[in-house]
Picture: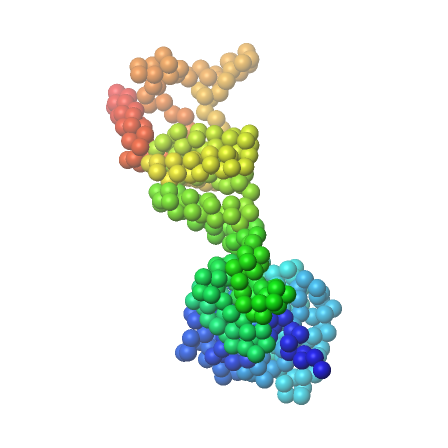
Length: 434
């Protein structure tokens, strides 16, 4: 007779039945932590588990059901709809009448639309179900506020290398007497690195390696050859257009802003390694040049545009190297967000003050009627003025008055820009004094 346990995938067989055997998430499950105490005592409440793949979201939900002696019902937002939710709720009502609670676990809950998410609300509210959702996406963006207000969000983190090594140790114990799994320390480190914080990925890789070892007659010995065959072609976690995507571009941008070219290069390469379109990064580098370098070093914007152009013209490695050059230059350049801040302030005024009229002296007068109305009559042509500057002239709508948005910083070229602007303001004051 076939042992049903041995036919299950390794990842399923390794699910712990006790909190003490759960690996990772010590920030949530160390003794004395609120979630640990709630699980251990079987105290149910609705919750959202948010974290990368393979961090133990489903396993933790099952543990909660075990400790609370509740029925564990799982639905997938990919495969299920409102009809399935209703069926699960009706079954939960019957259990509740018989004195047993139900944990309704919704995997990838972010894939449900807002109306589907609303279907849970009355049943969470009246206690028919304890809702546990699992998501890899930011709940603030993907879940509606009504559901979030009824559930506590717990952030799960990628497993650390020592935790993955601990998991390998448990696998070795679990498979003892079956296939006698054995790693050298160097090969074990390769599997940990390839797992990239994902326990499920690690277990799946080990399972494949075990099968290959049996075929090769090695009986559980994971050789270097087997390891290379199993681990070839892996990529780092990136999650294009998901939270990890935006976290990494944020890290790249902040490294440039913080004048750390080495960290900026690291995040650039991490994004490329994860499969990010380099054209996206090229566009963001142009934004960095304007937002964080600005007029402190105007060459930064030109170099960023040039790197984008090289990528379009040459593609591949040559273009990526050009972007790397631009990133290093931006990170090393003098920084100023003065233009960025001035732009934001001007946008606020433009939106808030409505359709203020253009002063008559600033209007063009291409027709006779416009000239008769005085358009442009008192305009002072700056090139004909001393120093090429019409001191005391006003270029704002009269009702708005003078505004000062741009405040150059004392870095790079903006030092000289600030000096010139101070001089021009002095000329304005002299003109007004006369």
